Length: 264
Image 1 (cartoon, helix red, strand yellow):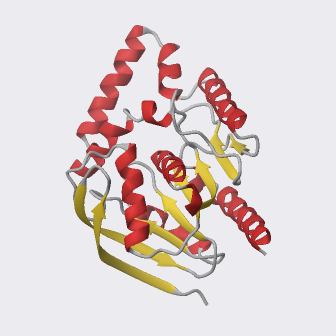
Image 2 (cartoon, helix red, strand yellow):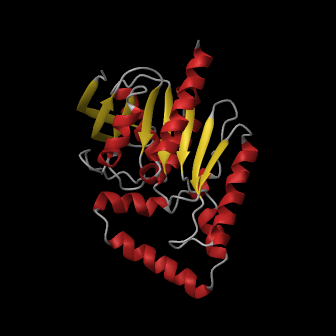
Image 3 (cartoon, helix red, strand yellow):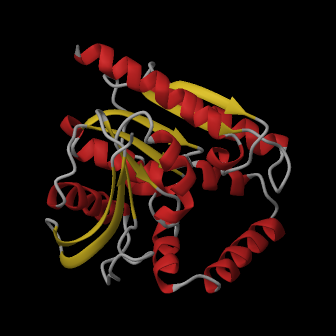
């Protein structure tokens, strides 16, 4: 039977460049090693992973949490830069004594956070699974093939979307579009298993040319670390874990077995 523990503990956040007391809302399910820590997409809360976390907890310990400013975690005035989000993750894991080292899973913005965290704390990370990550050059490349009118509409649509968000969601969205410069300096390691599960579905605003650019950028990542495994799907959009959960679950099983075999 899975051990289930749901807790929300007062956690003080102390980073090298800011001090921000914050209580993190988090959820732990299952037991065993390695510990999986899941970083969510922009503006999302742990409730969005409820079903998947339960399924994954049959394999090992799985942790989800609300970032500061979201869900039931405390609000924050600290800018939601990728550096500060990485710091928050480290403080959350440390102060709440989440046992590592970790298998990190990220979706969308969460993929950038786990990459930055791994770069900052390589000794704490055993492997990474990135679900439909956004390459640091992807927005610029996609904008470059648009007409001036299409570029202006894209920016207007983004501004209109941000107006519909809550304060916490909007704070992440504002910084989300400014992370590219930092992420260009974050290189993939070549000594841990890494899997990218990417959507190459055409439609819903994505053209064949858009998908080709995405593939080229993912190939650039593979050139950095040749062990990167790419799982491509055309059946799902950005939320692959919702429409094809078996892709993630099967890959988690394989990576856990690989990590456990290595540690024997």
